[in-house]
Length: 198
Image 1 (cartoon, rainbow, N blue to C red):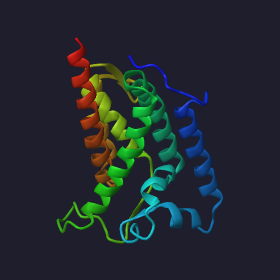
Image 2 (image 1 turned 90 degrees about the vertical axis):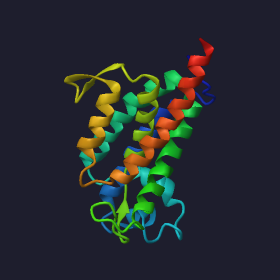
Image 3 (image 1 turned 60 degrees about the vertical axis):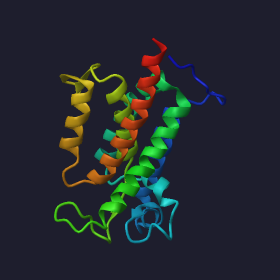
Image 4 (image 1 turned 30 degrees about the horizontal axis):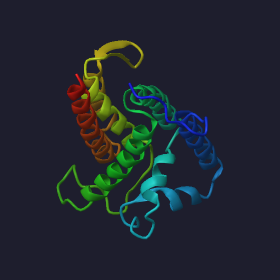
């Protein structure tokens, strides 16, 4: 079990949720769409706006989008922090989001039907970063029992994979996949460390 390495006394999970919600509220009042134009991740303009590899995680397309992501973030993040600590949680969250964004961009260059993303497309949302946390949990605690949609009891690894399959059609599944794979690699590393300690 990792101890908290918190210095400021702020809860990083609540800070992330708070900042994301405030930014979503700003989006709601931004009738001109300037926030999304400047901070969403665009497959055609990301080189000119490299900061969007981070900022796109804080933007969301709808109330249901931000609500579902923040609820999932709250539960996943606290579980991950208990396993690997706050520093690894934050690094995995942001790195997983960046990897997810890069995966989304990469697929825009692959000329395969149903896989290639539009070169003019843009993506918003924290899902890639959240799937990175899911990847850690899949590898470290695959058989933990969870209630999918707060109703259906399932092993955690099945719930996360089902979530990937159910949520991703018509959405930026490439970013979800990139985050999930990155998080699984982090989880594999920490799981090996756990095993060696026993």
